[in-house]
Length: 75
Image (cartoon, rainbow, N blue to C red; front, top):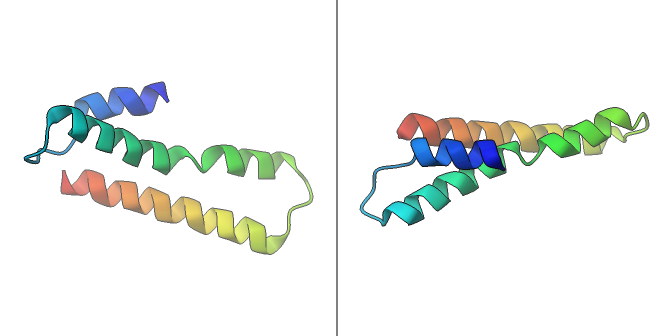
């Protein structure tokens, strides 16, 4: 939470919205990008994981990372 909040304070979009709204929006984007990491860690520690579940979580993580990367490149 803290690294996402610090990053949102420094890197946020420059739109016509209020500064607080822009920072909260950036915080949500960054938090969404890293929210899949605890799921991946639990799956890594659990030795029995169904392949479909593993592929889904991996694809979800890639999609969130690419979404965040696209947003940062747009800023």
